[in-house]
Image 1 (cartoon, helix red, strand yellow):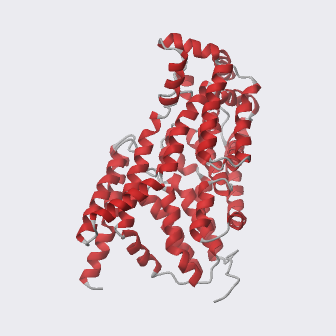
Image 2 (tube, helix red, strand yellow):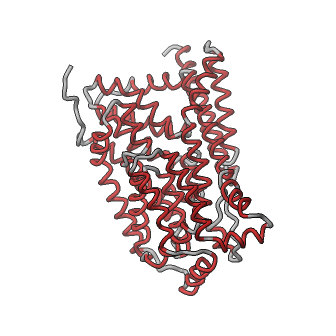
Image 3 (cartoon, one colour):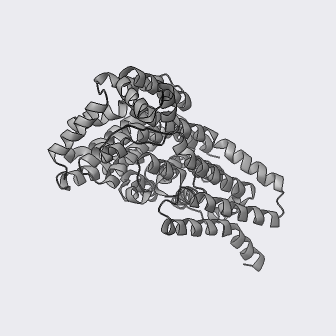
Length: 477
Protein backbone atom coordinates (compact mmCIF):
# COMPACT_ATOMS: atom_id res chain seq x y z
CA UNK A 1 0.00 0.00 0.00
CA UNK A 2 1.58 3.32 -1.08
CA UNK A 3 1.93 6.39 1.11
CA UNK A 4 -0.78 8.40 -0.68
CA UNK A 5 -3.33 5.66 -0.06
CA UNK A 6 -2.42 5.47 3.63
CA UNK A 7 -2.86 9.22 3.94
CA UNK A 8 -6.15 8.97 2.07
CA UNK A 9 -7.51 6.39 4.55
CA UNK A 10 -6.24 8.38 7.53
CA UNK A 11 -7.90 11.56 6.26
CA UNK A 12 -11.11 9.65 5.54
CA UNK A 13 -11.56 8.29 9.04
CA UNK A 14 -10.04 11.31 10.85
CA UNK A 15 -13.37 13.21 11.40
CA UNK A 16 -14.97 10.04 12.76
CA UNK A 17 -12.04 9.39 15.09
CA UNK A 18 -12.21 12.95 16.43
CA UNK A 19 -15.98 12.64 16.91
CA UNK A 20 -15.67 9.36 18.80
CA UNK A 21 -12.93 10.77 21.05
CA UNK A 22 -14.94 13.93 21.82
CA UNK A 23 -18.15 11.99 22.48
CA UNK A 24 -16.28 9.58 24.73
CA UNK A 25 -14.73 12.44 26.72
CA UNK A 26 -18.15 14.06 27.08
CA UNK A 27 -19.51 10.96 28.79
CA UNK A 28 -16.87 11.25 31.51
CA UNK A 29 -16.62 15.03 31.82
CA UNK A 30 -20.31 16.02 31.86
CA UNK A 31 -23.31 14.79 33.81
CA UNK A 32 -25.58 15.41 30.82
CA UNK A 33 -23.47 15.55 27.66
CA UNK A 34 -26.55 15.59 25.41
CA UNK A 35 -27.44 19.16 26.38
CA UNK A 36 -24.60 20.97 24.65
CA UNK A 37 -21.27 19.06 24.66
CA UNK A 38 -22.35 16.41 22.12
CA UNK A 39 -23.75 19.05 19.77
CA UNK A 40 -20.43 20.90 19.97
CA UNK A 41 -18.52 17.67 19.29
CA UNK A 42 -20.57 17.11 16.12
CA UNK A 43 -19.99 20.66 14.88
CA UNK A 44 -16.23 20.48 15.55
CA UNK A 45 -16.01 17.15 13.69
CA UNK A 46 -18.07 18.58 10.83
CA UNK A 47 -15.69 21.58 10.55
CA UNK A 48 -12.72 19.19 10.40
CA UNK A 49 -14.49 17.25 7.67
CA UNK A 50 -15.21 20.50 5.82
CA UNK A 51 -11.51 21.44 5.98
CA UNK A 52 -10.36 18.02 4.71
CA UNK A 53 -12.93 18.18 1.89
CA UNK A 54 -11.47 21.52 0.81
CA UNK A 55 -7.98 20.04 0.81
CA UNK A 56 -9.26 17.30 -1.49
CA UNK A 57 -10.70 19.84 -3.91
CA UNK A 58 -14.37 19.83 -2.96
CA UNK A 59 -16.16 23.11 -3.58
CA UNK A 60 -17.69 24.99 -0.64
CA UNK A 61 -21.08 25.20 -2.34
CA UNK A 62 -21.15 21.42 -2.82
CA UNK A 63 -20.60 20.78 0.87
CA UNK A 64 -23.06 23.51 1.93
CA UNK A 65 -25.72 22.04 -0.38
CA UNK A 66 -25.04 18.63 1.13
CA UNK A 67 -25.57 20.06 4.62
CA UNK A 68 -28.75 21.81 3.49
CA UNK A 69 -30.18 18.62 1.95
CA UNK A 70 -29.28 16.66 5.08
CA UNK A 71 -31.04 19.14 7.39
CA UNK A 72 -34.11 19.31 5.12
CA UNK A 73 -34.40 15.50 5.28
CA UNK A 74 -34.78 15.73 9.06
CA UNK A 75 -37.52 18.41 9.12
CA UNK A 76 -40.28 15.84 9.54
CA UNK A 77 -38.57 14.37 12.62
CA UNK A 78 -37.97 17.87 14.05
CA UNK A 79 -41.63 18.84 13.67
CA UNK A 80 -42.71 15.58 15.33
CA UNK A 81 -40.30 16.23 18.22
CA UNK A 82 -41.79 19.66 18.86
CA UNK A 83 -45.37 18.37 18.70
CA UNK A 84 -44.57 15.52 21.09
CA UNK A 85 -43.10 18.02 23.55
CA UNK A 86 -46.47 19.78 23.70
CA UNK A 87 -48.44 16.53 23.57
CA UNK A 88 -46.84 14.99 26.66
CA UNK A 89 -47.54 18.12 28.73
CA UNK A 90 -51.16 18.45 27.59
CA UNK A 91 -51.83 14.75 28.17
CA UNK A 92 -50.65 15.20 31.77
CA UNK A 93 -52.77 18.32 32.29
CA UNK A 94 -55.79 16.63 30.71
CA UNK A 95 -55.53 13.79 33.23
CA UNK A 96 -54.94 11.06 30.62
CA UNK A 97 -51.45 10.11 31.81
CA UNK A 98 -52.43 10.35 35.52
CA UNK A 99 -55.45 8.13 34.75
CA UNK A 100 -53.18 5.57 33.06
CA UNK A 101 -50.96 5.61 36.15
CA UNK A 102 -53.93 5.39 38.53
CA UNK A 103 -55.60 2.40 36.88
CA UNK A 104 -52.27 0.79 36.04
CA UNK A 105 -51.25 0.69 39.68
CA UNK A 106 -54.53 -0.95 40.61
CA UNK A 107 -54.55 -3.53 37.81
CA UNK A 108 -50.91 -4.54 37.15
CA UNK A 109 -49.31 -7.35 39.14
CA UNK A 110 -45.83 -6.17 40.30
CA UNK A 111 -44.27 -9.57 39.55
CA UNK A 112 -45.34 -9.32 35.90
CA UNK A 113 -44.91 -5.57 35.57
CA UNK A 114 -41.91 -5.62 33.17
CA UNK A 115 -43.44 -8.42 31.09
CA UNK A 116 -46.79 -6.60 30.87
CA UNK A 117 -45.18 -3.22 30.15
CA UNK A 118 -43.20 -4.65 27.24
CA UNK A 119 -46.27 -6.30 25.69
CA UNK A 120 -48.51 -3.23 26.05
CA UNK A 121 -45.82 -0.92 24.61
CA UNK A 122 -45.41 -3.31 21.67
CA UNK A 123 -49.16 -3.22 20.98
CA UNK A 124 -49.34 0.57 21.27
CA UNK A 125 -46.28 0.99 19.05
CA UNK A 126 -47.67 -1.32 16.36
CA UNK A 127 -50.89 0.71 16.44
CA UNK A 128 -49.17 4.11 16.29
CA UNK A 129 -46.13 3.14 14.21
CA UNK A 130 -43.94 5.18 16.54
CA UNK A 131 -41.65 4.24 19.41
CA UNK A 132 -41.42 7.95 20.24
CA UNK A 133 -45.17 8.37 20.65
CA UNK A 134 -45.36 5.18 22.71
CA UNK A 135 -42.67 6.40 25.11
CA UNK A 136 -44.28 9.85 25.36
CA UNK A 137 -47.70 8.48 26.35
CA UNK A 138 -47.98 5.02 27.90
CA UNK A 139 -44.20 4.97 28.53
CA UNK A 140 -44.39 7.90 30.94
CA UNK A 141 -47.22 6.16 32.79
CA UNK A 142 -45.25 2.91 33.14
CA UNK A 143 -42.17 4.75 34.41
CA UNK A 144 -44.30 6.35 37.12
CA UNK A 145 -46.05 3.09 38.05
CA UNK A 146 -42.81 1.10 38.10
CA UNK A 147 -40.98 3.59 40.28
CA UNK A 148 -43.84 3.57 42.75
CA UNK A 149 -43.72 -0.24 42.84
CA UNK A 150 -39.99 -0.12 43.56
CA UNK A 151 -38.85 -1.48 40.17
CA UNK A 152 -35.47 -0.33 38.84
CA UNK A 153 -35.97 2.62 36.50
CA UNK A 154 -33.40 1.21 34.07
CA UNK A 155 -35.34 -2.04 33.83
CA UNK A 156 -38.63 -0.21 33.30
CA UNK A 157 -37.16 1.93 30.51
CA UNK A 158 -35.61 -1.19 28.97
CA UNK A 159 -39.00 -2.93 28.88
CA UNK A 160 -40.70 0.16 27.44
CA UNK A 161 -38.07 0.69 24.74
CA UNK A 162 -37.92 -3.03 23.85
CA UNK A 163 -41.68 -3.19 23.30
CA UNK A 164 -41.80 0.19 21.57
CA UNK A 165 -39.08 -0.71 19.08
CA UNK A 166 -40.66 -4.07 18.30
CA UNK A 167 -43.86 -2.26 17.31
CA UNK A 168 -42.01 0.52 15.52
CA UNK A 169 -40.06 -2.05 13.53
CA UNK A 170 -43.09 -4.18 12.55
CA UNK A 171 -45.79 -1.56 12.03
CA UNK A 172 -46.68 -0.61 8.41
CA UNK A 173 -47.35 2.89 9.79
CA UNK A 174 -43.75 3.33 10.94
CA UNK A 175 -41.46 5.68 9.00
CA UNK A 176 -38.47 3.37 9.40
CA UNK A 177 -40.49 0.34 8.29
CA UNK A 178 -41.40 2.19 5.10
CA UNK A 179 -37.95 3.74 4.65
CA UNK A 180 -35.94 0.49 4.80
CA UNK A 181 -37.68 -1.28 1.88
CA UNK A 182 -37.84 1.94 -0.16
CA UNK A 183 -34.04 2.43 -0.10
CA UNK A 184 -33.41 -1.33 -0.53
CA UNK A 185 -35.81 -1.95 -3.41
CA UNK A 186 -38.10 -4.42 -1.62
CA UNK A 187 -41.87 -4.46 -1.10
CA UNK A 188 -43.30 -3.16 2.22
CA UNK A 189 -45.59 -6.12 2.94
CA UNK A 190 -42.95 -8.64 1.91
CA UNK A 191 -40.42 -6.76 4.04
CA UNK A 192 -42.62 -6.98 7.14
CA UNK A 193 -43.39 -10.64 6.50
CA UNK A 194 -39.68 -11.43 6.09
CA UNK A 195 -38.80 -9.55 9.29
CA UNK A 196 -41.04 -11.82 11.36
CA UNK A 197 -38.50 -14.64 10.99
CA UNK A 198 -35.90 -12.77 13.06
CA UNK A 199 -38.13 -10.40 15.03
CA UNK A 200 -40.63 -12.85 16.57
CA UNK A 201 -37.91 -15.06 18.16
CA UNK A 202 -36.17 -11.91 19.43
CA UNK A 203 -39.27 -10.48 21.14
CA UNK A 204 -40.11 -13.91 22.63
CA UNK A 205 -36.62 -14.13 24.15
CA UNK A 206 -37.02 -10.57 25.40
CA UNK A 207 -40.37 -11.30 27.04
CA UNK A 208 -38.97 -14.45 28.62
CA UNK A 209 -36.10 -12.46 30.14
CA UNK A 210 -38.46 -9.83 31.58
CA UNK A 211 -40.74 -12.60 32.89
CA UNK A 212 -37.84 -14.34 34.68
CA UNK A 213 -36.50 -11.05 36.07
CA UNK A 214 -39.98 -10.26 37.40
CA UNK A 215 -40.26 -13.61 39.16
CA UNK A 216 -36.73 -13.40 40.60
CA UNK A 217 -37.02 -9.76 41.71
CA UNK A 218 -37.50 -8.84 45.33
CA UNK A 219 -40.94 -7.82 46.48
CA UNK A 220 -41.73 -4.12 46.02
CA UNK A 221 -40.10 -1.95 48.67
CA UNK A 222 -43.01 0.50 48.64
CA UNK A 223 -45.65 0.04 51.36
CA UNK A 224 -49.37 -0.13 50.69
CA UNK A 225 -49.76 3.12 52.62
CA UNK A 226 -47.42 4.89 50.18
CA UNK A 227 -49.34 3.52 47.21
CA UNK A 228 -52.64 4.61 48.73
CA UNK A 229 -51.21 8.08 49.38
CA UNK A 230 -50.03 8.29 45.77
CA UNK A 231 -53.45 7.26 44.43
CA UNK A 232 -55.19 9.66 46.79
CA UNK A 233 -53.06 12.61 45.61
CA UNK A 234 -53.77 11.82 41.95
CA UNK A 235 -57.48 11.41 42.70
CA UNK A 236 -57.52 14.72 44.57
CA UNK A 237 -55.68 16.74 41.95
CA UNK A 238 -57.14 15.15 38.81
CA UNK A 239 -60.41 13.77 37.58
CA UNK A 240 -59.45 10.19 36.65
CA UNK A 241 -62.65 8.79 35.18
CA UNK A 242 -62.67 6.09 32.52
CA UNK A 243 -63.94 8.70 30.03
CA UNK A 244 -60.41 10.01 29.69
CA UNK A 245 -59.46 6.92 27.72
CA UNK A 246 -61.63 8.23 24.88
CA UNK A 247 -58.59 10.33 23.92
CA UNK A 248 -56.28 7.36 23.19
CA UNK A 249 -59.19 5.75 21.28
CA UNK A 250 -59.49 8.85 19.11
CA UNK A 251 -55.80 8.59 18.27
CA UNK A 252 -56.18 4.89 17.48
CA UNK A 253 -59.10 5.75 15.16
CA UNK A 254 -56.99 8.35 13.34
CA UNK A 255 -54.23 5.79 12.88
CA UNK A 256 -56.70 3.36 11.37
CA UNK A 257 -57.67 6.12 8.94
CA UNK A 258 -53.96 6.29 8.01
CA UNK A 259 -53.50 9.93 9.03
CA UNK A 260 -49.92 11.15 8.92
CA UNK A 261 -47.86 11.07 12.11
CA UNK A 262 -47.68 14.86 12.25
CA UNK A 263 -51.43 15.29 11.85
CA UNK A 264 -52.25 12.53 14.34
CA UNK A 265 -49.91 13.89 17.01
CA UNK A 266 -51.10 17.47 16.49
CA UNK A 267 -54.74 16.40 16.85
CA UNK A 268 -53.72 14.44 19.97
CA UNK A 269 -52.21 17.60 21.45
CA UNK A 270 -55.29 19.73 20.64
CA UNK A 271 -57.56 16.98 21.99
CA UNK A 272 -55.49 17.00 25.18
CA UNK A 273 -56.21 20.72 25.59
CA UNK A 274 -59.95 20.16 25.03
CA UNK A 275 -60.01 17.31 27.53
CA UNK A 276 -58.20 19.52 30.06
CA UNK A 277 -60.91 22.19 29.63
CA UNK A 278 -63.68 19.60 30.03
CA UNK A 279 -62.36 17.36 32.81
CA UNK A 280 -59.72 19.35 34.74
CA UNK A 281 -61.41 22.73 35.31
CA UNK A 282 -60.64 22.77 39.04
CA UNK A 283 -56.97 21.93 38.47
CA UNK A 284 -56.59 24.65 35.82
CA UNK A 285 -58.23 27.14 38.19
CA UNK A 286 -55.80 26.12 40.94
CA UNK A 287 -52.82 26.59 38.59
CA UNK A 288 -54.21 29.99 37.58
CA UNK A 289 -54.41 31.10 41.21
CA UNK A 290 -50.96 29.78 42.18
CA UNK A 291 -49.22 31.31 39.14
CA UNK A 292 -51.31 34.46 38.77
CA UNK A 293 -52.24 33.51 35.19
CA UNK A 294 -55.45 33.14 33.22
CA UNK A 295 -56.61 29.91 31.57
CA UNK A 296 -55.26 30.75 28.11
CA UNK A 297 -51.85 31.63 29.58
CA UNK A 298 -51.82 28.39 31.59
CA UNK A 299 -52.57 26.31 28.47
CA UNK A 300 -49.90 28.04 26.40
CA UNK A 301 -47.34 27.68 29.19
CA UNK A 302 -48.21 23.98 29.47
CA UNK A 303 -47.65 23.44 25.75
CA UNK A 304 -44.41 25.42 25.42
CA UNK A 305 -42.87 25.43 28.90
CA UNK A 306 -44.30 22.20 30.31
CA UNK A 307 -46.48 21.18 33.23
CA UNK A 308 -46.68 23.09 36.49
CA UNK A 309 -48.96 20.97 38.69
CA UNK A 310 -49.13 22.35 42.28
CA UNK A 311 -48.35 19.18 44.28
CA UNK A 312 -46.57 19.25 47.66
CA UNK A 313 -45.25 15.69 47.27
CA UNK A 314 -41.90 16.15 45.48
CA UNK A 315 -41.67 12.61 44.04
CA UNK A 316 -45.15 12.81 42.50
CA UNK A 317 -44.50 16.34 41.27
CA UNK A 318 -41.33 15.13 39.51
CA UNK A 319 -43.19 12.23 37.92
CA UNK A 320 -45.78 14.58 36.44
CA UNK A 321 -43.33 17.26 35.31
CA UNK A 322 -42.48 17.66 31.62
CA UNK A 323 -40.72 20.47 29.77
CA UNK A 324 -43.07 21.04 26.82
CA UNK A 325 -41.99 22.17 23.35
CA UNK A 326 -39.02 24.20 24.62
CA UNK A 327 -37.75 21.14 26.48
CA UNK A 328 -37.28 19.46 23.09
CA UNK A 329 -35.09 22.20 21.65
CA UNK A 330 -31.81 20.65 22.80
CA UNK A 331 -32.81 17.42 21.02
CA UNK A 332 -33.72 19.42 17.91
CA UNK A 333 -30.28 21.07 18.05
CA UNK A 334 -28.70 17.61 18.44
CA UNK A 335 -30.59 16.37 15.34
CA UNK A 336 -29.53 19.44 13.32
CA UNK A 337 -25.91 19.05 14.49
CA UNK A 338 -25.99 15.38 13.46
CA UNK A 339 -27.43 16.33 10.06
CA UNK A 340 -24.67 18.91 9.55
CA UNK A 341 -22.03 16.29 10.29
CA UNK A 342 -23.79 13.69 8.13
CA UNK A 343 -24.14 16.20 5.28
CA UNK A 344 -20.41 17.00 5.33
CA UNK A 345 -19.51 13.31 5.45
CA UNK A 346 -21.79 12.54 2.49
CA UNK A 347 -21.02 15.52 0.26
CA UNK A 348 -17.29 15.27 1.10
CA UNK A 349 -17.40 11.62 -0.11
CA UNK A 350 -16.11 10.29 3.21
CA UNK A 351 -18.94 7.77 3.39
CA UNK A 352 -18.29 6.50 -0.13
CA UNK A 353 -14.63 5.87 0.60
CA UNK A 354 -15.52 3.99 3.80
CA UNK A 355 -18.09 2.01 1.82
CA UNK A 356 -15.45 0.96 -0.70
CA UNK A 357 -13.20 -0.21 2.14
CA UNK A 358 -16.01 -2.26 3.70
CA UNK A 359 -17.29 -3.81 0.48
CA UNK A 360 -13.87 -4.84 -0.73
CA UNK A 361 -13.83 -7.53 1.98
CA UNK A 362 -17.36 -8.84 1.36
CA UNK A 363 -17.51 -12.20 -0.39
CA UNK A 364 -19.95 -14.72 1.10
CA UNK A 365 -23.59 -13.94 1.94
CA UNK A 366 -22.75 -14.01 5.64
CA UNK A 367 -19.88 -11.53 5.20
CA UNK A 368 -22.11 -9.26 3.15
CA UNK A 369 -24.89 -9.26 5.75
CA UNK A 370 -22.31 -8.83 8.52
CA UNK A 371 -20.84 -5.84 6.68
CA UNK A 372 -24.33 -4.35 6.28
CA UNK A 373 -25.07 -4.81 9.98
CA UNK A 374 -21.71 -3.31 10.97
CA UNK A 375 -22.32 -0.32 8.71
CA UNK A 376 -25.75 0.36 10.23
CA UNK A 377 -24.33 0.29 13.75
CA UNK A 378 -21.36 2.42 12.65
CA UNK A 379 -23.56 5.13 11.12
CA UNK A 380 -25.79 5.17 14.18
CA UNK A 381 -22.61 5.59 16.20
CA UNK A 382 -20.91 8.17 13.98
CA UNK A 383 -23.74 10.27 12.50
CA UNK A 384 -25.99 10.11 15.59
CA UNK A 385 -29.07 9.69 13.41
CA UNK A 386 -31.30 6.67 12.83
CA UNK A 387 -32.40 7.75 9.36
CA UNK A 388 -28.83 8.05 8.08
CA UNK A 389 -28.12 4.59 9.52
CA UNK A 390 -30.94 3.27 7.33
CA UNK A 391 -30.59 5.31 4.16
CA UNK A 392 -26.79 5.23 3.69
CA UNK A 393 -26.31 1.43 4.08
CA UNK A 394 -29.41 0.88 1.94
CA UNK A 395 -27.87 2.88 -0.88
CA UNK A 396 -24.42 1.44 -0.26
CA UNK A 397 -25.34 -2.22 -0.47
CA UNK A 398 -28.34 -2.30 -2.83
CA UNK A 399 -26.37 -3.12 -5.99
CA UNK A 400 -24.01 -5.45 -4.15
CA UNK A 401 -26.94 -7.58 -2.96
CA UNK A 402 -28.21 -7.72 -6.54
CA UNK A 403 -24.78 -8.77 -7.79
CA UNK A 404 -24.72 -11.56 -5.18
CA UNK A 405 -28.20 -12.71 -6.29
CA UNK A 406 -29.72 -11.85 -2.89
CA UNK A 407 -33.32 -10.66 -2.74
CA UNK A 408 -33.72 -7.01 -1.55
CA UNK A 409 -35.69 -8.20 1.50
CA UNK A 410 -32.41 -9.54 2.92
CA UNK A 411 -31.04 -6.02 2.84
CA UNK A 412 -34.16 -4.28 4.18
CA UNK A 413 -34.47 -6.81 7.02
CA UNK A 414 -30.82 -6.46 8.00
CA UNK A 415 -31.12 -2.66 8.01
CA UNK A 416 -34.15 -2.83 10.32
CA UNK A 417 -32.59 -5.50 12.57
CA UNK A 418 -29.50 -3.34 13.07
CA UNK A 419 -30.05 0.27 11.96
CA UNK A 420 -33.51 0.89 13.40
CA UNK A 421 -33.12 -0.81 16.77
CA UNK A 422 -29.52 0.04 17.73
CA UNK A 423 -30.03 3.82 17.46
CA UNK A 424 -31.38 3.97 21.02
CA UNK A 425 -28.31 2.10 22.33
CA UNK A 426 -25.88 4.87 21.35
CA UNK A 427 -25.99 7.46 24.18
CA UNK A 428 -25.31 10.42 21.87
CA UNK A 429 -27.71 9.29 19.11
CA UNK A 430 -30.79 11.50 18.70
CA UNK A 431 -33.09 8.53 19.48
CA UNK A 432 -31.31 7.85 22.78
CA UNK A 433 -31.42 11.56 23.59
CA UNK A 434 -35.16 11.65 22.96
CA UNK A 435 -35.98 8.65 25.15
CA UNK A 436 -33.65 9.90 27.87
CA UNK A 437 -35.57 13.19 27.97
CA UNK A 438 -39.07 11.70 27.76
CA UNK A 439 -38.42 8.98 30.35
CA UNK A 440 -36.17 11.21 32.50
CA UNK A 441 -33.31 8.71 32.61
CA UNK A 442 -29.62 8.52 31.70
CA UNK A 443 -29.16 6.29 28.61
CA UNK A 444 -26.40 4.36 30.37
CA UNK A 445 -29.00 3.22 32.94
CA UNK A 446 -31.40 1.64 30.45
CA UNK A 447 -29.09 0.38 27.69
CA UNK A 448 -28.18 -2.96 29.41
CA UNK A 449 -31.91 -3.80 29.70
CA UNK A 450 -33.00 -3.05 26.12
CA UNK A 451 -32.92 -6.78 25.42
CA UNK A 452 -34.87 -6.60 22.16
CA UNK A 453 -32.55 -3.96 20.72
CA UNK A 454 -29.40 -5.79 21.84
CA UNK A 455 -30.48 -9.25 20.63
CA UNK A 456 -31.84 -8.14 17.21
CA UNK A 457 -28.47 -7.64 15.43
CA UNK A 458 -27.17 -10.97 16.74
CA UNK A 459 -30.34 -12.72 15.60
CA UNK A 460 -29.96 -11.48 12.03
CA UNK A 461 -26.29 -12.55 12.02
CA UNK A 462 -27.26 -15.97 13.40
CA UNK A 463 -29.77 -16.47 10.58
CA UNK A 464 -27.18 -15.41 8.01
CA UNK A 465 -24.48 -17.68 9.45
CA UNK A 466 -26.83 -20.68 9.56
CA UNK A 467 -28.24 -19.78 6.11
CA UNK A 468 -31.79 -19.63 7.49
CA UNK A 469 -34.35 -17.70 5.41
CA UNK A 470 -31.77 -16.09 3.12
CA UNK A 471 -33.94 -15.38 0.12
CA UNK A 472 -32.47 -15.52 -3.37
CA UNK A 473 -33.66 -13.57 -6.39
CA UNK A 474 -36.21 -15.59 -8.32
CA UNK A 475 -35.01 -14.34 -11.69
CA UNK A 476 -31.41 -15.22 -12.44
CA UNK A 477 -29.17 -13.07 -14.55
